Structures are given as C-alpha cells and as structure tokens.
Length: 216
Image (tube, rainbow, N blue to C red; front, top):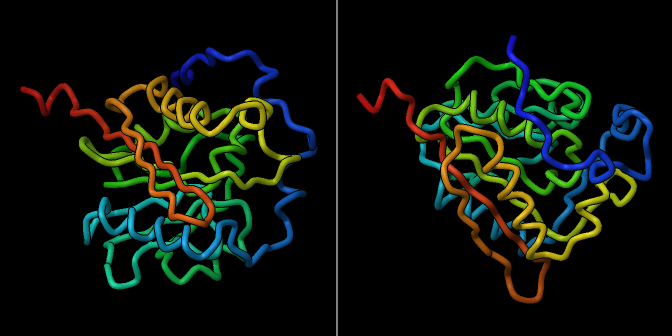
C-alpha cells in the first residue's frame, strides 16, 4: 500500500484539548442535532440541489440523521461514523461502518464506489484531514462530488487547534485547502447557504477529476 499525502501543516495545528481516544468521547449515543432547524433545512436544500437522485452517497462522519431530502431516493446511502447506536438509528442508511478516522483515515470501500461523499458539521474534528480526503477522492467515481458543510458550532475540546483559531472566512479557506491538497479533486467551490437569523452554513465542494483513461 502506498503512503498517503504528506501533511503540509505543523503538528500543533491539529492538537486538541481532549487528547483521549475519540472512542471514549463518542461511546454514548447523542441523538441530538448540532445546528438549528433553519440551518438543517438549508443543508437539506443544498443536498437536494447537488445530489442526483439514484446516486450512491457516502455520509462521512455520520450519525443518527443525514439531513438528506426525504422525497429523493438514492441507490445507496452508506454511513461511516463513531457510534454504532447512532448509525443504526439513522433511517436513511442502507449500510454503515464504525470507524475512527483520526486513528485510521482509510475508508473501507472500493475505488470509485460512490457518486457523492458528504460530510456535515464534523470536519473540525479531523486530525488527519488530507489523508481522509485523499481517501474520499479514491472512493469517488470520476466526476463524483465531495461536499463538506460546516457551521460555527463544535465540541471545543475535540475540535483541532487550527479550527478554533480561525474566523469563518479562514475556516472556509482551510477546508478548501484540505480538498486541494488531497489529490484527485478539482477546484474547490465555496457555497454560502446561511439562513438569516440562524446558524450559518457554508459548504466547500469539489468534483473528482476524470481518470487518465477517461480522457483518451
């Protein structure tokens, strides 16, 4: 197996207040939402606009709810998260896996097995983000979509230091940098779907570049 992409950031960027293994923090299910209702509606609307019906979707860092539009059917919605009870409670998932991406950033899926990978309000907890998004690139089909959505809320003891040190615009740039450095993904695009009077919502999206064979 080849090694993953080099980390261009200093290690202290990804230090956290709580240095204990994440499995202890997430061992009890949290059947709550982490953004308010209007922002959830905005996220669902973004998914409605960007995820094609019938596509194969990976919900990365998933939990008990995926915020996908209820009226749209997808051929597969796989969930990968930290808590088995939360994943079992998610009615949109067709299958799920428990994995701590900070301990093991590989994804247990074959190459080009998804048309879209979404990650909602969780990117701030990744300590090995470029390795994770390199794996996202690997499991996407050529032209497949990576969509990373986030707000301003977090568990502060588990969020990485660089995230907590930045303002909103720089957090957007940070996520775009993660995707750009992962390899295989095209130019990141920033989308602001923040509803008025509610939690903000930003998304950074990029598509898997075509393979060399598909260009011939």
